[in-house]
Length: 446
Image (cartoon, rainbow, N blue to C red; front, side):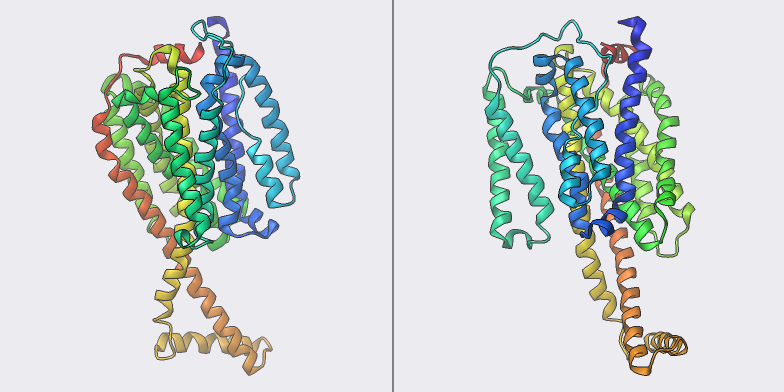
């Protein structure tokens, strides 16, 4: 297998680029898609969360699928599905069509990966109850998060039903997987304190990463008026910084271990979200560019050390199952992060609008001056007195709504900053593993 290691590495990198490019294109294009398809911010999140939810469902099953069908056969089939579904996404003209095709983008595939010697093909019984309970629990949870705001949360019997179904489904799923001898998802791996804490930190990282990827394009395009190309460029610093810092993170891990790297990464990431929480409607390109650069540095330090600390203590035979479980927690958390961010953003806009509107009254000299200026400008443009007065009020209300939206975005970014800060104690549960970086690379190559 050693002679093909560069082919494998190139194939894995190509698959990763395909996935990241696909996700970035969708995130940047969300505002245009929302307008073109005629749907709200909460509804358009289904384009992202549908893709993530399908990944969430499949990732825990990767180890079982690999053992049953073989990695190469599963991956070749999946890459064809991914490519075909991506093409169909470009042809979709309605939200249901777009979400359906995004759900079909289930897995990334590397054609040249072969089964390692320790991967034994499984035959016979399939853990159908476990798979069904997993789909029920995660599906109900995601639907509850997406529909909760529109249906006034637990005042709706539908949301209550989804909450019960999600809790019951996930509880029974855990019981089933721990009770059966051949589970679809091996939850016994969570007995490792280092793996469990690393997985929890991965969830925090997922919420921050996917939440910010969802919010920033909306902020730049809806409030700053950036075109899709410019908002996409503003997201590049994070990726560029990660490309530079990640190799350095691998070198530093062997010297200092996971705790200093992850703690530093959490602090740097928290600082970047602090900077984003101070954005205004008058910010420029560089005000968004620099925090993204810091995010790339922070995420790089966390990614390398966290994945190594999580998987380094896992035996080879369970490596695929552990990787699937680690990634699914991050994906679920990212999906939750997007849903919570969209809901918090929407409710925040309404709340801040009410607060600001209390101070925008005819008793306020600044308000009277602004209305007078707007009315005069509209009269000069040809409007009659009544129409000019009404349009001036509409324009003033639009400005209040815009400022309320800015405050709501800042509030969500501040919450993400707090989340990263609160995750710091989990770093103490991590421990350095005996798996060096070269040995970890050998495991991946196998």
